[in-house]
Structures are given as C-alpha cells and as structure tokens.
Image 1 (tube, rainbow, N blue to C red):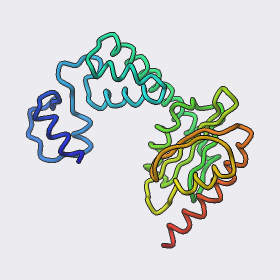
Image 2 (image 1 turned 90 degrees about the vertical axis):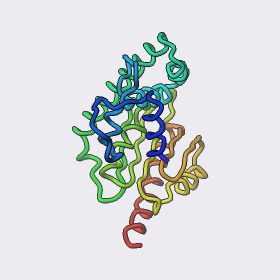
Image 3 (image 1 turned 45 degrees about the vertical axis):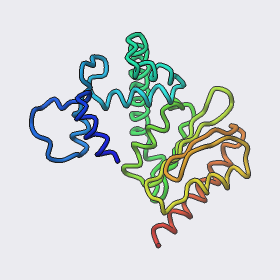
Image 4 (image 1 turned 180 degrees about the vertical axis):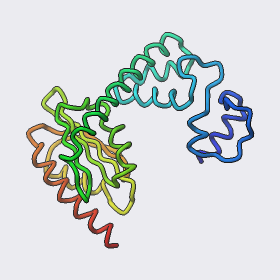
Length: 212
C-alpha cells in the first residue's frame, strides 16, 4: 500500500526527510515534507508528482518520463509545463471562487466552465472540489467544437461510471475511467443534452445515496 511504498523509498535514501526528527506517523504532513535527494528543480516529492500529472494532462508525458530518467533538459521542459499548469489551475480556482454562487447546489456540483477554464486542468479542479462536495462534474470547451468533461466522486454509493455509460448511449463521444474518476469528450452540439441528463441522473443517485 501507500505507506509501504513511502517506507521503502525512505529506506532507499532516494527520498529523505528534511528534519532529523524520528518519524512517528505516516500522514499528509509527512508526505508533503518528503524531499528527493540531490534534486534541484523538484526538491519536494510532491512537486515531482504534480509535475508528472501536469505533463500527462497536457499531452507531454514524454517530458515526465525523461525527467524521471534524470534527463536535465527534459526536467527544465517539464518544469515549464508544471509552472504553466499551476498558473492555469490558480486562475481556475479564482474564477470558480468568483462564480461559485452560480453553481451552488445541495446535490452534485455541476460546473459548466465553457471557455473560462483551460480544459487540461478541469480534472485537477474537480479533484480538489470533491473535498467539499461528494460528486463534482466540470465541463469545458475545447477548440475543435468539442467539450471535455471530468467527473469525480468520493463515494462508491454513487455509480458514476454506470451513469456516464447510460448518457453515452444517447450521445456520441469518448470516455474512460472508473467509479471514482471518469472523463471524456463529446460534441458541443450535445452540450445541453449532456448537462440535462447528467444533472437528472446524478441528482437521483445522490438522493438514493442519502436515504440508503
């Protein structure tokens, strides 16, 4: 499990603690403090992990792979991708904070960001928002008249994969994921239909989860 992986990493001495204090508990504070030995651009292990996510979600996974192989040039390119991704995510957080009253709901949180949020970061934003809402759906416009969606859920009582499968029987598009994280794309011409079907299905599922 995750704790065993961290313990193995510490024993390898490739991952270190900045403090010499003994480790008494493996928790989020410890994970956030872990550092990579002899690393400059991505000193903190958490930063390195975020860089990998940023490269994957922006279609530049090759930079992350080469960076993991200690390619200094790739690390610089990956750092640039990571910083741009962080800026986009910060901008998305600001936009949502200013507009969250529009999307307030007692059920699932559904955000139609349209062109206001870069589509590459909707997954990260949805994951962050699930700390407060059990089910979060964000959609954003792509440049090719398509729409990208990201659906996150932190309860297995709501089967989001089944819901998306049923929706995509009615519209054309692509999707993939599991019952906690799922995303995909569809035509912008189906935007209203997708939102309406998702809202109805997710609200019903959330209601059933609350009374079960």
